[in-house]
Length: 394
Image (cartoon, rainbow, N blue to C red; front, top):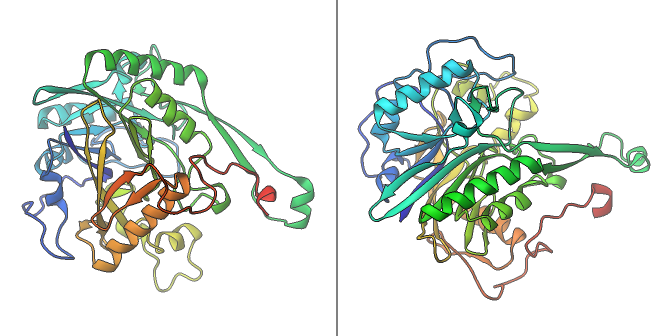
């Protein structure tokens, strides 16, 4: 089973040029979605024209015509459990589901109850069956489904904050260290669902909306939040073959764990203008002095340098992965990368992955594998995130 996997997707529902096979640098990369047996993305916006906006900093929506656009682009399956899902309430997501169903785009992650929201979408590919789950840990208050409330599938996270007063006296302004762990009852519930799905399907894939966007995460605590690696490994132990991460809006490492593959963050794929978001919000005006910190960070590359992930898996052996770099243009549209951008994407991706596991190798063509012996040691990663407090690292 060959999957084409991309990260966050925001569509406008407006007509666009026909999708063609990409050629050289600067050409549209939408044609990359037409490869493989199944194309999967994270729908980062509800599709609705109705509803009242939620009381939160960023609220987004796009018209229901975006569902037909997704189908035309080549999407077969999308995850819905994400932090903007209920920006216009449960009715907004009901509009989204109806539009996706009418367009023939499959989905998982939203439901009228927790049981429905955490139910896998089963897709038949040839003679194989894929069970696809969608969970969210980047969870606004009240967005998770319960026994009697519509919402999204959730794996909640507990957090605590630690600071060393002596160190802060010496280095004032240092942020506290954030400890995080997945909420145990939610993890156990997800494990049980995955085990049951694995009994009846060849492959189990789990979309997880989690982690911290790069512009908010201190370097000493990144790139992964503390809860991510233990959670991903437990879900693979339960039977998942593939973990597909989204939310940080940049690429994060890859990890081969047992016979599973963890894509910690698949970055951005396309961000069209929509209610609550526009390209201008991601661009610093020449007359803006000083630029807001989050806007300055966005200009450094992670938002605009991304990839398409080609994953081959059969549920028995270790998945195979090839990473195909792309870049987003000034309007956050996916294009084929300039050579220097392609090298930058692969180099940063390889370095981050080796820091997590020094046995990971990324070839020049984007093929990713885990060697039996490390090609070279980079830092002290050895398969675990460095979770020491900042003062302990000095």
